[in-house]
Picture (spheres, rainbow, N blue to C red):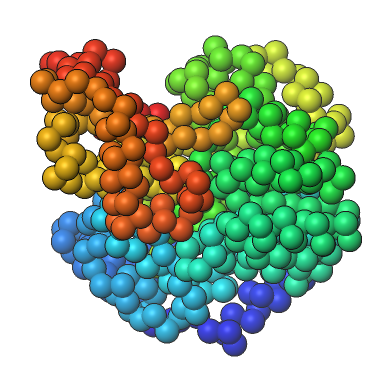
Length: 501
């Protein structure tokens, strides 16, 4: 049984630190991704006790899986039937936590954290995604750069994962200093005022609505962002190109395809893909051409569009949702991540653009000499289950239900509600909850703060992501009261959905 150690994996670190991004990606492209994911499956059969038990429970003979055609018929993993069904050590290579040297957590519907052990060696693939952003978009190999991590710190996956990957880039030779301010605006502003003048550019990395809060609050405190040549790295939520444009104006951005990038990641799989100047340019064009977006994605609304390395994270689709495989301390083999989306090969995207009459990069707003990387695309609309993402935290209907089931509130309400996020005219995020009144109850504005406070209290108690990711001033939801059987939110005779997007 193999495990990871600092000694045995020294060649992996040496290779990453001594190999250019161009060469790293070129090496990967020489490997057949389907062969590599099949090898991952075979290794898991040998080295991961839980996966052997999982296959046995599904009556799968691993000896029958000898090629990619048979691999795609393997049962899908998910949290319920795999991650929560088998002990954590059994889900690791070697059936032990010995190969891991760090831990991250994500919050489930009950608020009980799911632990995701990993090794620094497995961060190298993820660090390549950060290197793509910092090099291809921000030219950070040539510019003295300050990176301010604005994700929540602690065991939460975003903050320390981001910090560690940025440290890898600094170790590799990038002129990069990493400041771990976390989601503390006062500390972020202190770092900006004291350190940003010493650097050619400042990169803020955080959840989209929080980064916007930082920018807006900074402006209110007299910070002139444009003088620091700011760049933005987002993760966790889909946003519109109009929103990107709004933030660009506030930081003095003149190159929207190069001044920001979004990462697509999960606690279980790490960073799965990243926006590139090419994917942003395509998305900006699609924002102005909804018919083309509908043709490409099946919907006119815009998903997040990123490029990914199929040898690092291998994507498939299942009923219009994404399935991913990837090597990690807890390896993923056909893991159903419940995100609605799809995969587009690089050549397919080129053919699509040409069919739309786009024959040159300049028509997408990119420099004529820009060279897109030959990597496939994955698009993500968001969770296909019933969660709503707010400041990077997954908000579950079950959390809200508890807030509405308090004795002083149940006398007014049926228990039905609709959970959604809304954008203000200024581009801020609000957590909106529409609640249904009992037939004999008349709406009274005095009810709203009582309901809002109860829900906030239970979210803080039950949902550790919400408690740690969401700024205090954004934690109280906006409550609207609706009459029984309201036609907009609670129509009679229709199966009720507790979330909207």
